[in-house]
Image 1: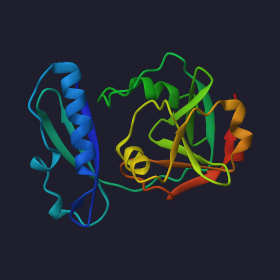
Image 2: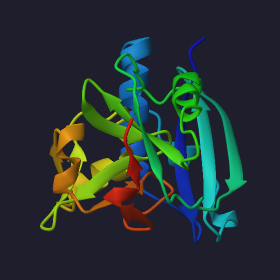
Image 3: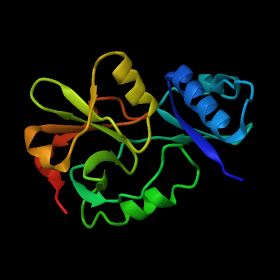
Image 4: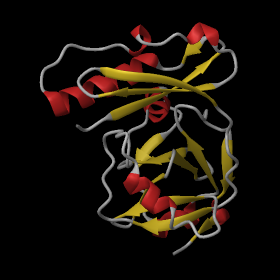
Amino acid sequence: MCLFIETLRIEDGKVWHASLHDRRMNDTRRAFFGPVPDLHVCDYLRPEAYTARTRCRLTYARDVIRVEYFPYHVCPVHSLQLVAKDDIDYRYKQADRRVLDEAFALRDTADDVLIVRHGLLTDTSIANIALWNGCEWHTPAQPLLAGTQRRYLLDTGQIKETDIPVASLGNYRHIRLFNALIPFGEVELPVGQIRMY
């Protein structure tokens, strides 16, 4: 059976962007299991017990199978290694992350990889990205995974979607990594810290 996950941020007794997690989870369930009634992540969580930033992992298929809580600390990222993976597909947040782990193993001495598909930037092994061109933040129009934090940033006009070819990296100054647990702006590095193939 194919299992999927939602990774949620809980902090100060609050679940962040619960409705966006609901939407992605229910879209995934419909794609794999046909017409099913909506589920709501908050029906399965007990956030009031957590004040520090906590990673909540909700595992599901047609129904929710397991909910786990883990302390969370942001790992520093000072360098990224470009890795070409034209055949990678992670549009659904699967519990099986082997394709991402295989890409991550190619990082050499960098902290993480920046995965390139058909010449276009996508995501790192754990985060969506946005690049600063001096005027606005651009995020890849074709990410590996449409993250919930990415959706929030697009909806609020903080980032804009566009194709970002590797050849255009020189047009950007900074790159930010973000996901459900890493707020926008918490992890940022100069584009010069992206190592070419």
